[in-house]
Amino acid sequence: MQPTDDLSRAVTATLPGRLDGDGDGGPRAHRTTTATDTSRADRDGGDGSGGGNAGFPGHLVAAADLDGPQVEELLRQAARLREMPARQARTLLDGAIVATLFFQPSTRTRLGFEAAALRLGARVTGFADPSTSRSVDYIGESLEDTARVVSELSDALVLRHYVTGAARRAAQASLCPVINGGDGSNEHPTQALSDIWTMTRRLGGLAGTVVALVGDPGTRVLRSLVHLLARMDLKRLLFLVPPAAPLDMTGLDAVTHTTLPADLAVLLHDSGTPYEFRSDVSELLAEADVVEMMPVDVPSLESHPAALSSHVYVTPERYRITAAKIRAVGSKALVLHPGPRKDELHPDVDDTPGGLYFEQVKDSLYLRMAVLTQWVAPR
Image (cartoon, rainbow, N blue to C red; front, side, top):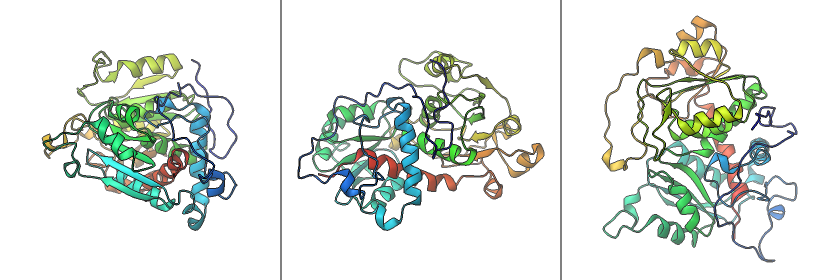
């Protein structure tokens, strides 16, 4: 596969070509609509601002499930929604019910999807504490049964789970679209899409740029990001990885350079994306147009939340970004972080021109609104 620059131009432009992706969202798609259903064109006033699901997979489980034009449309839709009057946006999903099923703690993703649904006129149900459901008590209802039950009551499910592959399993059982809000160490597609939109909006495109990733590339946010960045004709992708990041991906214990999962190494090689490793964050600030931060000490994303406990961790200096380090190398790089941050990103970076820690949250709202307008079809 040859790299393309389809997603690297401004989101408002008409972008030619395709990005590779199998488009397979699982065996189930939307419910069949009838003549009495409200059409998407009717909901959005006929101007196309509601998106539509033509050609999209039935579920959003992984970044690789989307082809290039579909990703481009999501970015354009996010841009349209950002400019749309709030009163008009609230009509797009009027009457829809979005269920958020979070088996792991979340602030940005859960509240982001709930806020996105409410801003589109939908209603929200679900749980943030799985102990309030029958899936974790003495009965132990299966994930598949939980997904099927909730899909009978709602128009879309947003799922976060600590088991890798849980989103795909839920999608196979659900009667309505499933949107992956992060599953184990697998993927977090909407966070990656949101970060890509943040980058392209501010840089005007990513073709020919240098993007740097700090943290374990085996974690779900960075995995999804690498899947998207590998298609964007980057000049170079840089990694600053923890010294011995654990890798618990089933069947993927072979790694390149200790911490790059084998499947991502193959993906980058096949896409023709040059990638290199660096040993200090100052090198990234000096070379990159964008630096995406992650904590270098991340608890296992495949552990049951009840098994985790807080602990004190001091990030080694070479992994920390501060305003002083940015000034020292004269960096103009955008500095992103999907959150929550620890001490790897000093709060004084928020006041620098490239510090986008909080702006990312607002961008993610519109991207998740775009996702919902594409996948949710009220009954």
